[in-house]
Image (cartoon, rainbow, N blue to C red; front, side, top):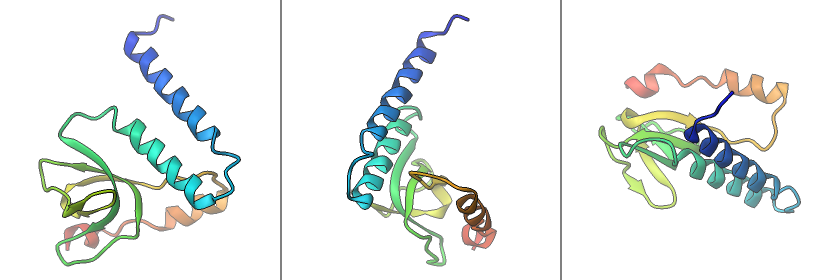
Amino acid sequence: MNRTPIQEHTTEIIKSFIGESNSLRNLDQNTVRGQLRELFTSSILSKFPTGQFGIGTGIIMNQNGDQSRQTDIIVYDRRILPPFIHEQIGVYPAECVLAAIEVRSWISKGVIKEFSKRKVERKFFNG
């Protein structure tokens, strides 16, 4: 099967990401290793959306002031509302958030069960 240049380019980006991530295996500091993996993932994701979308990290806040936990990667729509604060970490209005992503170095059945129970309540986003 012939692959298009876009498919080839995307494949190479993902291979590079996997290689960078694997190179961190021997770091002793789990926190730093996790943060670097989050940065790599954000970097990869930021290559694909159009300019109207942004990628960041931080917390999500609704109009009532309810706040999410620290979120590894937040995909947001810049056209709706900008983040309140957007330096290395940000505070994102719930109205502009399209996706919240948890980056994990490993996964198990227990982790999947834990996160499947953490459904974002509709009231958080609707007030």
